[in-house]
Length: 310
Image (tube, rainbow, N blue to C red):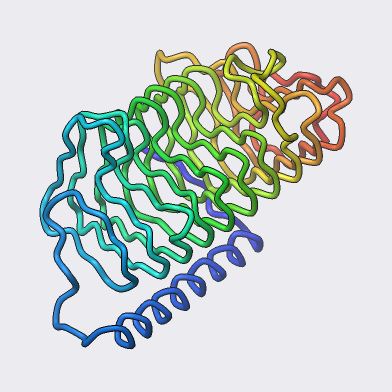
């Protein structure tokens, strides 16, 4: 069972901003939908994999299945200001493509899962656009990442589960100003959350447990903290990790609860519970912790270097 912490003042501010963003986005989508075509009693119904090329409301009305076709993403959104209700349904595949792919042109997308499951793709959900809002969903058994934020900015991913994905629960690759909150991220093969060449992102109110290599990793190595990266990758700076659990809850090992790699700087970690990780619950490869701040932690057992903790 998830053991998410309620945030304090900052968390309330974040949740207020999130609710306000959702409201404004929904109002904007309504205005666009009404202004571009006659309003209907029900949103357009989706019953098979498709591409959404016009702004407006859409609703999934049956479970969807994607065949093993190269590049065969199931739901592709190319239009801005789309509101998509997954309506509790399962979107499954037999392919290394994406379950849901929000293309760079599709800014301001709002996806309401209502408990939907996206499974057995390469990426469960890939977001390449700005200002996406996605909540209330599960991504599981995908062959790469449950959620991939690919150069995305200002995405808000909340109230979700990312479990048993082959590589990562959530990966932020060269993105900025994204928010992950209230995520249950368990039993993924590599990292629970991987912040890769990305800055000014926030991860809060999380339950990140029993992932193969690390719970939350800020760095650029496929093989773990302190090991070489492939190619030249930007540093990951000014990422904020707060109010969560990064532990081991079953027999699956998790080598690091939270790890920050060499040269990644000014990343505060606040109010975190971490235990049972081997070898380290909290690990900073920078010998002096650089400008990273580790403070107000709840429970810590194995910390390296110990001088990082304030």
